[in-house]
Image (cartoon, rainbow, N blue to C red; front, side, top):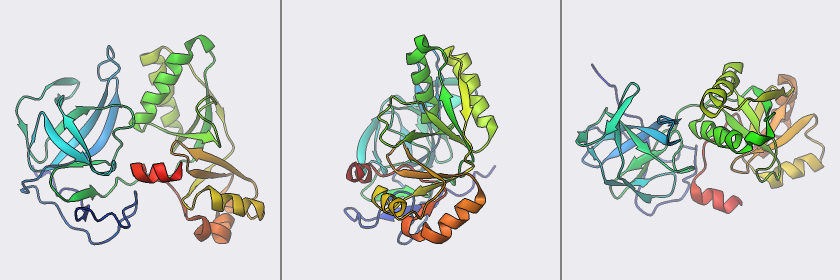
Length: 292
């Protein structure tokens, strides 16, 4: 059975960081061959609570080249080459998992425990002197938005923990009111209603928490990659009407629209100026620091 070709990566020579921004392909593309001696792997899924007793988080990594063994020291492309030691790798077979004792080869999938914020879907792990980043998994723009309300204040900690875990998995996206430092009501953004049902069901079964959704009227979202300074300027010029402004978990502006007509008007009027995008990938760690 053929596993197909590995993802197509971006590659940068050591020390060459010009133009390397998350979510945008720059420069020449090349293919990393499975026979390459250097290890490379692609994070394609995150899952929480694979062991409910420990509330763990597992990143599923497809080995694309080289060999993987427990204890391998790798570099994390999105974290600007930060070195990680993968000391607790696991093999996965259905609902069963066991500690990895042997070697994994291209095409194999390994599970790697991780800390919050350390892994995101689409991340690249690699060894070698050249920093590479595989092309990201395509995403869809959310079309359903709801405030997620905890009706039982006594379960505040369980509610927050459950939301955090599901957000780490990518089950839904979280948006915030501008300036919210974490104390406000979470706003969940989903492609369809089934995602919200999954969140509700898992919070109930895994965290014993019930939730209530307060649906919002907006049906379209665009990330303003130009940043808050440009968004504020456009708002002061009254070129964005009937638009709700929020921010994502990385502090980037997100504009919500109530109809395709208002969205089309905004794109025609200020789309290029605000660099409107239907979605945004997890930013590079140094890019995040510059924007704070």
